[in-house]
Length: 363
Image (cartoon, rainbow, N blue to C red):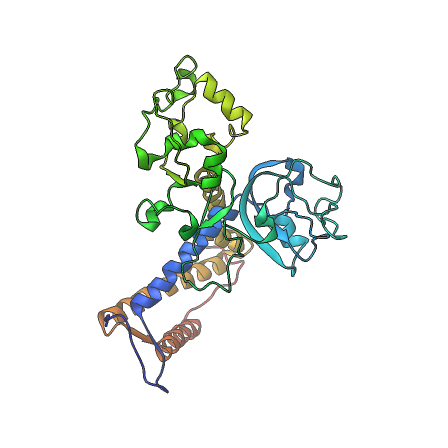
């Protein structure tokens, strides 16, 4: 039995170890980072309709407002303002999509943010994800009827459908957490675009062009011409930087255009680039900025008192956790109550003994 795990008999006070507490905090931070990466680019007060068919954005579908089973997608702002308290499903991100909120695909649900919209976005593309089903198994996510705890899904970068790892038809190329850093192309997309099979890194790497090969490849011969015909079409994984290793000869570039893959093969299309921009943008909404905005309208003395209280809380909490970690490492409900009671007593004592000048005092 691990030393970090504490068991109690029935009726005893529940306990938690410091390591368990820190693990919970880390899990919450990871979830926050995921949400920042997904929604950092979103303006929750502005519908994206005016931007046209957005290259990549977070999308949702509202089953409450679905009109006769017509498929539709809405932006984050409309999900928040126009479809609050509705049955809304998250679709992660989709490329080249225009918000459907307020058009004929939704039942008499006008858009509160951008009311003057076309009746239909004719260039939008919809797949089974908009019905709430995913993968080759055509099951919902999360699947309440699933008999396995392994419910993780991986998105194909071509069709943008999501697949259970056990339904890919091939084993993950390495440790699961590392495979999440790679891009995946599903078997159906490889069969639809057979040339992609040549880039299967599990079958040996293709000799890459230079990192900046777009201009250099104008007069280059096709790097696929020397490869043997590959008739094995299965799911493939691509390592970071694979777009820069694609052949950019005239023939292949024309093929990409004909198959509508040119935007997909642009570095700017990568989900990693989207998340990078989202995280950078979300940093403008970090805790320090929110605190600064909150303090802006306070008087000088009040600001100092608030900041002092925050710093005192951080120091006291740090000392408290270190003391527990150096002792038995166990936190009980009574420990937490005692900690906050001690903070309150210190605050009251300081208020009794410290002179607080008025806000208009100049010093």
